[in-house]
Length: 325
Length: 294
Image (cartoon, rainbow over all chains, first blue to last red; front, side, top):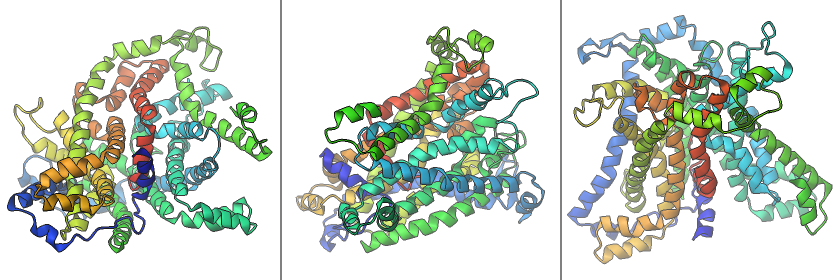
């Protein structure tokens, strides 16, 4: 049973390989056998969870869109007033934090895809070589992924703290006058946080690529070796192209991760100057002193639109493949 | 590590292999570095580090900071809060999503794909997209006598609901893929024998999904335990916060020096680390099987 699972589970991954659904079409007679009670049970089984999910996730997402065109003080529905595009106008033209936030979200993605992702792939390729202690190494690289972003934020503060942190203590910059403020300096803090984020992301990518590499047909590698290709050529011309489904997943995961980035920054410096993110702006608008519902929703809509640009093509491609299978 | 390799392996090791081991061992140590540093800071008395600096040889190593952090801030209370939220959330998520998965994978109704699409897309959304209306909704829903606050806001029930709603998308997707790989004859035979739909689900399909459920349960436990955002916004009373979100308030109020912060952060991480070490296989397989998760 257990050996079967390990084999089966990567198969059933997010991008289902063709042929994963052998008996998808159910014979017509199947449905006719259902009694009225069965139909009722089925409706409940599918309906209740769907209702909960739609009510809390989709209704609120659409409410975000609707509220973005209004002002509302949150007290009674009568006070909702339609203001058209005013919230967006104010956001784009007057909010000094908005464009930096967009820029930081983009930087977040670019850094994650440019550094920890290839590093994770590199580690995965090395660890896939039937090497001794592979599990021990994997555990070390993967450990940060298990911990919460909040804990990671506190752990890295011990490294970056200007007075007591590891880096400044090591380089003697923890005395007044010589401070390097990794957390407060707007030119430094985003990069400092991104190192912590990359530290975690590498392990995540490594695990995804390891799963992808397990699915590569070993005979491909043998054939390539017989043709006299060296390790790098084999990887570049044979292995990497077969990792395409994994690469898609990695890309989507990384974009979503960059859009969701929040906890780490919040713990680090609450998204102060230099580390503004769209998610931080939305949240500060709620828990801050002057909560403006329509305005906060407008920021959320920007975040939603960017997410949907990624989510929709990905899901369409995934499900189209599934339907064909 | 790499030295033991050379002695144990029968065939002589190529230099490239030794180099690779050196690299991997070095990189692995570097990866553990931040955690080891936190552990080292947490084990030293504050008086000593403030006098000698943090980068210095220890005179005394002890677990005092851990016990102090735990008792002073009443961390046990927050761990209990987390349990009250996480246990029902994991169970209900698995229960609901397995029902949806059963429906979409076993019955070829037309809305299958659409339903799955709705669930999966919902799960990929950043949480901040829905938080503003959700926050208002939680303030609007009156539940006198059911929750302590009389509302969904600031209650464990509210957190359980949003966790279930949000995570069930991912679980439904994974489970429906898994159920689809089970042979169809199983349920067909049962149906011909006159078994009810519920029995098919509860007695035939669900027991076969145990490996996938175990993987998902591990993953969900860690995710929900690690949640910071929902509780930060949807809980107002510090006392009601689960441990991960409470950490933010405890720092400053009780964890007054970096050594105590380190101890508190590590104590918070311990349950996830235990789950990870015990159920590593489940966790990793769950993560790769739902690789679409953000």
